[in-house]
Length: 543
Image 1 (cartoon, helix red, strand yellow):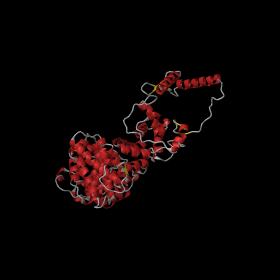
Image 2 (cartoon, rainbow, N blue to C red):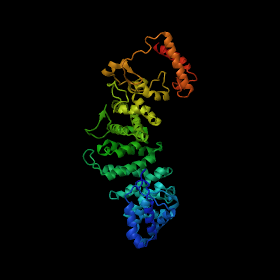
Image 3 (cartoon, rainbow, N blue to C red):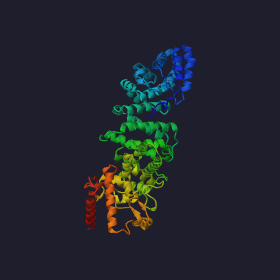
Image 4 (cartoon, rainbow, N blue to C red):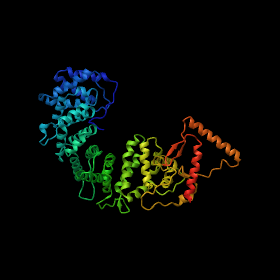
């Protein structure tokens, strides 16, 4: 979540800030305006590691002093610096709910041109109004009380009205911090989401996206000239729309039209390389795609552009799908926050491959191409398949399950094909969850098989270990040369060892239940009964 400033990190030098705060409070107006305030701002303006005022009484006094000057028009020349100091102080959330009063919030809204008196007229942003918006962003992020006060004072309606009046000449900074305020409010107060939609705030934001796309579209093909500032603004708009649509309904015509319009915008951002080269933008587009109804995904494959750079597979434009796959490949290199980084993009790919069979076939060729190298385990290497197979045994269960679901769909939900491409060991967890262990699989409705075995696979097929999913040399039979008595002795030793581990709670042997899921056994001898059942099932299948 973003605020007007970078997050606070504490340091051990609290005396300096306390001393400066005392000077700000005790000095004359001339000392305050010409020296102390400038020193305070200069010292802390660009620091991410700022110290906090330790004395709680001093903390309250400096806020009161700064607002005293802000409230009087005769000190207008100092308002910008007072707001800059407040922006620095508002990075620290300590006691903000206690310090900030309703009068302070009202004054900030007035200086930010978000009060009711200025609601009806076109507002030209000033440095003071922008700086006030920055302070409000920090306060909204850190203070529950401020969020409640801002909502009470009709700020949402005024904010959306102003956003709706944006023109090409409107200040970029004002746009950016207006959208940030809207993002923070809708992220931290979920009850405001419906209010924003009732005020047509989402429609207003969609219009801004449309306008930005048109502004940067030249008269030739799909070539855009893009400003970084506009990319930042678009990313923040997409974040707000994510908050608004994450739990939205698609049952009414108005919502359906908005979803179509939104999907069209998202398609354009992914389709054109001038946009899709911005990875933050692609990330936000993908996050928002997770909220779009499945039926709208077909729009992601419909191209109206005659572009020689299009990627077409079986008469289907898969340019946007290719961008999503490339993004997935990059995200798979991350080592931290794996669920947050991978869950949205894998979810979008699952939806895409469910939408169109040509898309599924194209994605399967990119992720699970025909097997050629059977000497390595499926999880070894740097290919998309290898990176995804590694996650099938991840301790992060939500991530493991969603990746397994994606690969299973690419395998047309066929157990044998899943084992072929990933190895039974990697896929066993998913089979257990789905009840697919040791039972005949129900036929799933998919198109005729497009899978064909390569010469390399056929050559080594009989030596491929289905558990590891790779070729293994024939190993010597450890029981060879043993008498029947010796074999029986070793078998009993194994049974005893398993029984000891079971009683000690180290392992929990299971049998396969009638529902195809593992069921814990009470005694190790139950495994013998299970072997007889499996043998009977094999004989029945062969008949």
